[in-house]
Every structure is written in structure tokens, then in C-alpha cells.
Length: 337
Image (cartoon, rainbow, N blue to C red; front, top):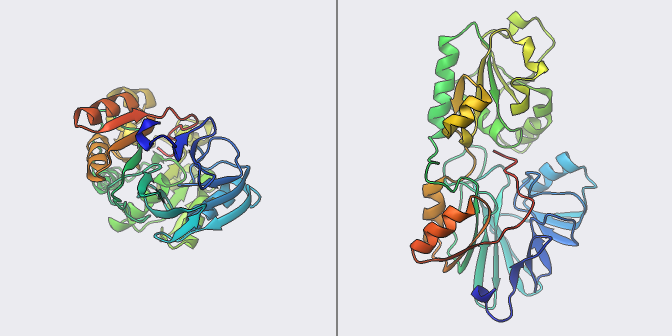
């Protein structure tokens, strides 16, 4: 803990990253009395905390996923709003990951730390864009922290999807996409590209997509996949959980074009393993160049890497003159990718 002095104020524990003077954990892996949650994916937002502070959108996502009793008390904070907790100035700023996602900015005794949660720098019409905050300590994810990962522009990948729909009007297009964030981003990008037909969703995706609609993200005409004759879905755009692409559920679609929207589609071996016909390199995480650029742009002397491919990122940042180290926090699993 030498990076933060003899009396450390921010450090990892078995429960998660802990800010001692505020007595609060950020995205803890176990139930704690007070938690700040960066976003609603299940590897960051868990049930059982005594009190939760998050953006209003993340609170709504957590209530939908975990139930209204998923925490003893939910409290929402506006982006950019500063509040004092135990003498620590705390504010949330956009992370650009999914709707409601935020970085946690902590200031204490002249030191500023930014805990990014999951983030991306690319534009996303379903959430506020990433905000760069200069800091002394930057805590970063490392989901795609290998040089091979350079994500494609998401709008261009969705344009490929729409072009395939036009080329194959007799075939439904079945797109595997995670139900919180990725699904809604793909739909919104399709709408911005001019696709105005109904978009059909696996039943497991409807409630979250309807929540997005209520929170102001216009997804257009979305419908649950009906129990109809397969021919009636010829040429339709259908989104489902990745596991459903080759599941029994998908057999209602005769000869569908199968697709998967994920940053992992950059890896040919993953594409072969998934068996999809149309891989779409669409990620809600920063890629390798973005991870490096963001750490450098913050001006942080110390960079802590929380999960993912930490070895490569720690090495590269150290080579560029930063003090970088892996925190080895447990419990993060890339649920939203």
C-alpha cells in the first residue's frame, strides 16, 4: 500500500475495494454495510448490502434484477453531484459502459482516486459518454487488455447486420447479446441506421428493455418472440441471450443467420467455438489502445488493475513510466460482455 502513504485510505480487502475514512466499499464482492455501485451488471451489483449509493438508473436496474429488497436502502446520486462521506468528497461521473454506469471519484487529504468500474471511450447512444477525470490513483478494468483487442466501430458492425438482413430477406437473424446494455445498444444503433421494423426479443430480455424505454432510451417497436408459425418471422431481427442461439428455443427459426455481438468476436477461435455465421465485434468495454490511453490521460502516478488480463496491462503501463499493479480483486466475471 506504499502508493498511498503510511496510513492507507483506499485499499483492497477480501470483500472488495475499501475506502477507510468513508467506511464504504466500491462494488464489493460480498454483502457489506455500505456500498457504492458503479453499474448494474451482476459481477458489480450484488444483493444484501445494508445501503447502496449509485446513479438513479443503476438503482432501477438493481431493483429490477435483485428486487426492491435487494439492499436495505437504495440512495441515488446525480452524475457530478459531490457529497461528503466521513470527510471524503464522493461524486459519480459517467463511465460510458451501460445506462447508469459511473466512475467513483474519491477525494481525501489532497489525494484523488478514480475507480472506473467497467468503461469504454466509444460513443454509445444508450448512455452518457465517458468523462475523463485527472487523478492521483486510477483504478481500471482490464477485460480486453491484450494488444489483439482493437474493437470495431459499433455502428459499422450494426450496418453489417442490417446489410445481411437485406441480402437474406427469407432468413431470421438471431443475434446473441447480453440482456443488460448490449441488447439495447444494438437495438438503438439499428434504429439510428434506419431500421424501423419491429425487433423481436427473447422473453428474458423484455423487462430490461422496457426499463430502458421508461428511463428515456427510445428503442422503437420491440416485441417478445411470439408463438407463431416460423414463416412469420422470416427476415426478422431477433435478439436473445447468447446461450439461446444454439438452444432448443432457437429451433423455431428455420435456417436463421446466427450472430453474436461481443468484443470476443475479435478472436477467430472464439468465433469458431461459438459457431455463429455473423460475428459482430461490438464491445461495451475499452479495448487495448483505450485502456492505455485512458490511464495516461488521467495523469495518475499509480494505476491499479482490478480484473481481466492484468499482467499485460501492468507491464505496458510500467514500461511507460507509471506505477502499475494488479489488485487481484475477486468476483468479477465480464458478465456484461
